Length: 331
Image (cartoon, rainbow, N blue to C red; front, side, top):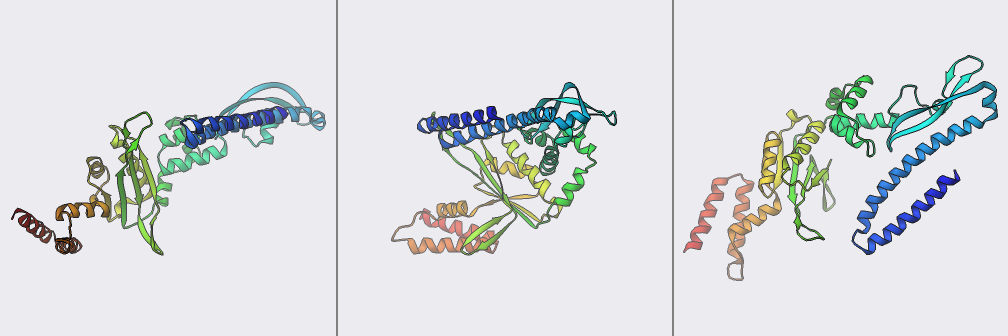
């Protein structure tokens, strides 16, 4: 125990040194926290393995154990924990009273004889498979350990769980789904610009005082160079797993109408592309033209009429106003 506590202290000192170094250079807190996550998960793995082997030695040295259980050979065992796949050694014991052979360590930690995945791993596999799919569950549940899609399917089948029924029972019925799609421009330290794509999915809006709250939000995003279909597939998978799609009346994709956003119309069934309020205002300002002290009242009136035509869904009226503006500009 002293050895692992010493290693823990050394690890903390090393992390703090690394934090100060990265902060003074280029990594900053973001890189430190990413490294910290890796180190803490590795520490969790080391502690799990140590605890198993340390407990085995404690069991072996207990005097009362020697009265009832005779120590036989050691052999190896493997279990999949949330920290990764853990290999450890433990002893086989012979019960002198019953003649039964047992692994006392397995009994102490409540590890079933043929158990490969710990219970919390199985629970997370099921939850992730319901939320997304078998493949993603196998890739994300266990730290830096990939479980094959087939293995996840077999495990869930072995537990006699019907994922499809659970997905249907957990799905929500809503009238509308809203998808806000936008992009950002990030200047890289090494030069150049990345354009991460950002998407928010929500199903309703509530007023919280003067603020507006988006309900049941889900965020998606990242850099999808040449792979924008991957982003929309993620969005569709989430919507399909969360909502009863054939009960949804409207799915609105709000954005500036860029091509990558319009790609969403091909992925999301019965979706409608709508200019969000910011880009709508920007487009109307562009149609009406710049204001100055001489034409301010006239421009404000044009905007009011255009907005009214939108609210009334009278798009023929919208065209008439636009033609009116164009005619005036050509005079």
